[in-house]
Image (cartoon, rainbow, N blue to C red; front, side, top):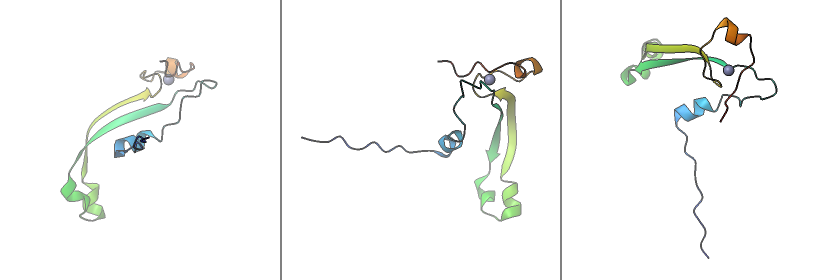
Length: 88
Ligand SMILES: [Zn+2]
């Protein structure tokens, strides 16, 4: 009888960041307002000391604020209502 090899889940840095997002609470139905940013990374500056490292990331684009769960852009009206959540 042979055993299947164990599946080892490998995480990328992006997966790790998304692990920090709490699951949707269906009782509280509260929006999770987020913004997303995209930076140009210059690896040569990343290990050149703290001041030079600060310049290693150049902002290129930003989106939001929007709700991570219902994926709707923030408005005062939407913010005053419960979140529809991450409906399948
Ligand atoms: Zn929402």
